[in-house]
Image 1 (cartoon, one colour):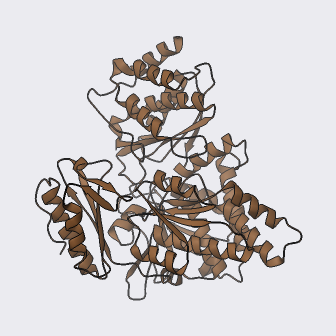
Image 2: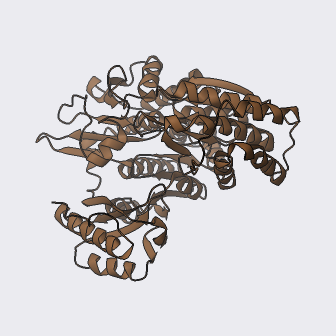
Image 3: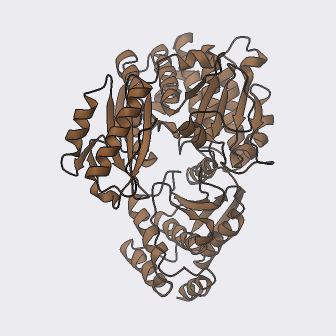
Length: 545
């Protein structure tokens, strides 16, 4: 067991601060970068074990996404480019929180439970974002992989979705694509060019897009990709990291929460703009109208545009495939009504967290999923991909059907099915707008969002709130849901729900109604209820105006 000796020796170079406890959440581990060295080393160890267990390449991404620059984090990527399974999330917390002298015990416990053959080779891909702490922390991951005798490939600076893509390419023996950044650009950009070939006389204005790179890795990668787009998309890049701070007053999260354009971007009236988050797995679109009013097109608007386009192509192709849109309780009520009543698309609601949406989307031939924050993608079942390919190659099929099938094939190739990907989603949205000859205003007017408000209430223990029905109803504390229902009845087109945060002792409150005043008033009244019934701490919530 010389390997375990090596693990112990190396571990002393990555000591754990005594008493520090962190949980592996939906987005892996995330906290101040100074506290993460031991976590990174141990995730390198765990990734090597996961690789031995699955006999496949595993990914480790060093990023804290839309968090501030001083934070960092890490997430593990499973063989098909998806998030690591819940059992291994629990192992991640177990390994991360083991005190220094108990680390070997924790590892041996996993090896025994999972019956891991330690002589099996391990392969791990590692990537990092642009934070100043990422180089040091990704080295700690590589040290961990090495301590267990694993082979690692360091991809250096990549977006989170690019690393997910690499892992999937590697484990499908190249069927999904070539496991290089160049391979990624080639696949996506060729598909984009194929799609936009079907459009008539696009002007330079229509080809132009302003992109806010959140001063992060997405900006670097869009720059690298530009030459592959052959001027079919002309990008003006803002917040490219040359002088601003990562995620500071810019990026998808800032734009979505503040409902205003990021700093450092010049917008002309009616011009299409989008913002990535820090690791480029989220995207939101927006524009300002002639009166200077700001309009946000978030994940709901994106899911609606994409699913409408796909449904039209399926109809043209005469393919009987089941398409669904997966949302969370945060999806705007107007988007749900439009999809169900006008588009006649199946809509499913799941708990918050991409892994829940991804899982639900897998139940359909085509599953479109987006969180309102702009994180999402489209999944195609094997059956769907095969039927589309058969039709595209069917010599006896009529031209309209074949054209629709060819468009569907290019659409599949422009999408990163492993995970939400800001670059891939951007190319897909731009292609759809081009094919449909739509302006950003026409896209926005598909339906009007109901005014809404989100706020949070500090509580002494978030676990007193328990929910059901995809987090739309509270089952505890007693009387809370009944009281919310009574408040909702006072307003038109209203709904409200509360859910505990996944990471901190706060309860998140969401409310929507027919006017912004009503949505704000309802959010405030529900916040007061939570404060009173669920053990609020500090000052009681103040009215929003």
